[in-house]
Image 1 (cartoon, rainbow, N blue to C red):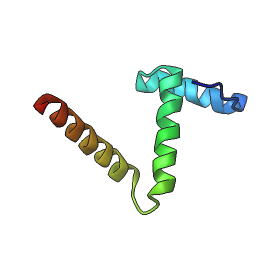
Image 2 (tube, rainbow, N blue to C red; image 1 turned 45 degrees about the vertical axis):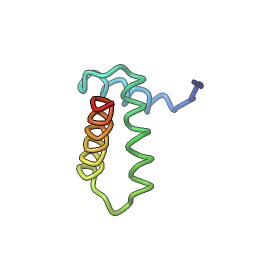
Image 3 (cartoon, rainbow, N blue to C red; image 1 turned 120 degrees about the vertical axis):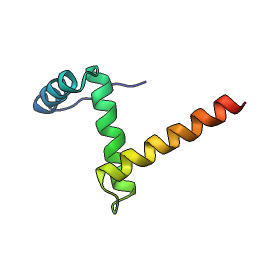
Length: 68
């Protein structure tokens, strides 16, 4: 784990979004970082496509864990 310095306004944006999305500030920042990374790696996918792919991957991991 590390420390990330971000702009004060971005921190405020994360804080506000975290309260709306019922996530901790760290979880909200992690979500935005993960989605941004996935969006850069998959520029032809929409946000909804990325979310669906992540849900499908989680379903696959869950099914594998249950089968084990």
